Image (cartoon, rainbow, N blue to C red):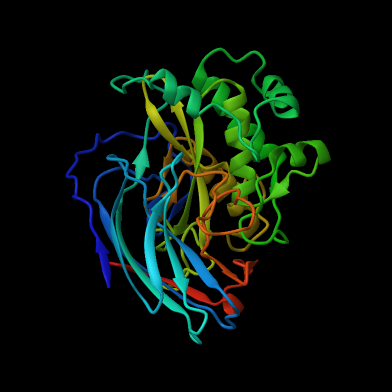
Length: 365
């Protein structure tokens, strides 16, 4: 067994209120996440290679985000009949466990236990922001540059310019892009997993359907093309929503297919601000009784709240793009949110956990 633990940072959080509280109220109360109480979770990822052939190896994402106001990665431990090594992406800091098995191993297996803490987030964007330290020049460049799947030139820049025309402040520009995503995209249930996130292809084809890694990537790309820092955060839902939204939480302790990508923007004076337009479209499609109208109270509430706030029932793995898996001969990954594995240099289907096979379970501590 290997164990890695980071110091637990005790931090306070300002108690802020979301602008324009939503109209929807469930039996749990209005959809109004507020920072305050931290919640702790234990996540167990168990991976077995069903049909090992030749050299077999796997890569399991580890929680590696530490943001003092809303998320703490508190270490992971693992057991395996192979050789496990924790590795770190040099550009984004994403951590993963790389496991290699001997070719003679008939039942390759690894089990990873991680602990994290999270809390709700909210900021009032109707009031002037104050107190947040500005990003350094290097950080601003890092969070406004393009990458393979999220370019910031060409059709992305053209679209962004059109959306923000006439908007003066950063908040106005980002809100216009958020609203454009909500109005013009849709959640496509046929898309596998969380989507691919190739935003230029989406815009060129005119097909703006997808899932969270598509819709939130499009949001991030349009914001970056407007010169405002933004980033995707790749993770997984770990608990039900305490606000009554079936679509915005884990349905059971088995969270194997509950991966979800969120987004943040950096606004002068406010710091990093929570956003999630993709989840607004998820509420439209999936919230019971499903296929809700855009003016349904549940949709209105989500639309208001998820611009500036989100619920702390979610684990953040990393912010990484264009991820190279150490020891793999395959191409770089657009993002790392699912366990990965290879046999004889052939990549297994990470979106088919039953045949892969792996399970992920969550428990609130």
